[in-house]
Amino acid sequence: MNDIFDCKLLIVDDEPELRKMVSEILRREGFMKVISAADCKEARQLFASEKPDGVILDVSLPDGDGFSLMREFRAMSDAPVLFLSARDEDENRLLGLGLGADDYITKPFLPRELTLRLRAVLSRAYFPVILRRTEKPVFRLGETEIDLNSGTVSAKAGLFTFTAKEFTLLEKLYENRGKIVTGDSLCRAAWGNNLYGYENTLMVHIRRLREKIEPEPSAPRYLVTVRGLGYKLTGVEDK
Image (cartoon, rainbow, N blue to C red; front, top):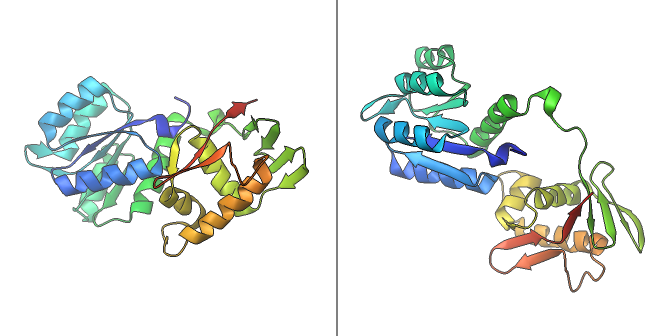
């Protein structure tokens, strides 16, 4: 596992629409391995066969309760568990945390809150401070070298510095190198959840990024547009 986005996540909730919504939120965030179960029976089967790295668990399930199910999971694995429940009473929250849950979020919830807390839980579990990389990557796009530690690009035309937004967008593209990153995902990385009106601004920043990293910005080879879907960083050579 290279980062938290390699984690396989299991969603356990009896509401189909909520399972679908949470799955979409997680995939937009970058988690591509997401599975789900509608009840305790299905969750047990998936937990045993798929061995998820993290679980998002409802408390009220049609054939049991999440607290008991978490105890079963804990007997088999140390995978972190985050409760996502409509039960907002303090006693339920304290019971879940007291049983060893890694976090407890009540419904309704903010998608950003869910992803931030989940990332924190997974980071603590799989990438404790002593193991985290402090160095950011240095990589090449053809003859151009990009250093994310200094936020600079060294090209034939000279040495350039990225702006904060350019750096955030490029880092997001690098994290998903070789894959399509949607415009919404890039906007969220740079501006948070308030996406209204940022599409054109994103295009401006992408154009400026290309002016720094592409040998011919008008005919991009490395930061390419995938029509109707988003953008993709290709041709990355890690150093």
